Amino acid sequence: MRKRLPAEQARRVMAIFFGAVVGVVLLSYWHSQRMFEGYNAPLPMLELNRLDGSTLMVDELYGKPLIINIWATWCEPCREEMPALQRLKDKMGDRVQVIGISVDQDTNLIQEFNRRYGLDFAPYWDPDGRLAERLGVTLYPSTLMVSAEGVWLDLMVGDREWDSDEMVDYINELYDGTWQ
Image (cartoon, rainbow, N blue to C red; front, side, top):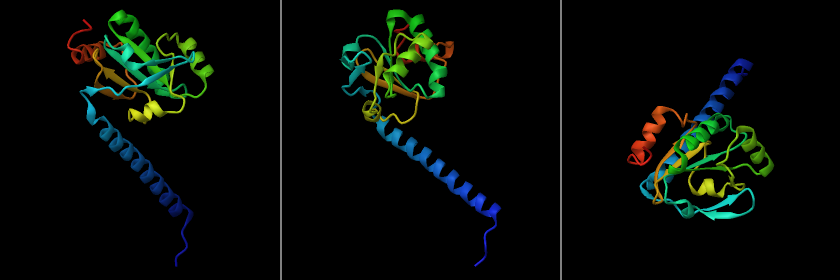
C-alpha cells in the first residue's frame, strides 16, 4: 500500500469537509422547502414568550399585516438587518405589526441588543428553539410575512434592507396595497 503524502491528505480532508458542508446546506434547504409547502395557509397557533415573562398568543396580533423576524444576537446578518426593520416599522406606523423573536437563551443579551440598536419591536424570545423548529426555521434571520387574517404568505431567509423602496414595493404587492 502506498503511503499518502501530507498534501494528498489535506486535499482529501478538504474534499470531505466541503462535501459535508454542501450536504448540510442541501438538507437544510430540502427540509425548509418541505416545511413551507403550507404557504397561503393559516399560521400555526403559537404562544409567544415576552422578555418580561408574560405570554401572548399570535392570533392576538392579527388585524394588521404581521412581520415576524426570528433572529439571534450572535448572528451577524441579524445585526445588520435589525435597524432596517426598525426603520420599516417606524415608516409604516400602525399599519403593520413587526415583532422580533430571539432564539438566544440569555434575556440580558437580548435586552442589551435591543437597547444598543434602539429596537422597540423585539421583546420576544424562543430560548429552547421550539417555536423556530415548529415553523421550520433553521437559518437566521428568517422573516415570516403574515396577513391581517393570520395567513402565512411568505418566508424570507437572510437579511434584507427592509426600508428600501424595493422591499416596500414588494410588501405592498404582497399585502395587496394595504400598506400604501
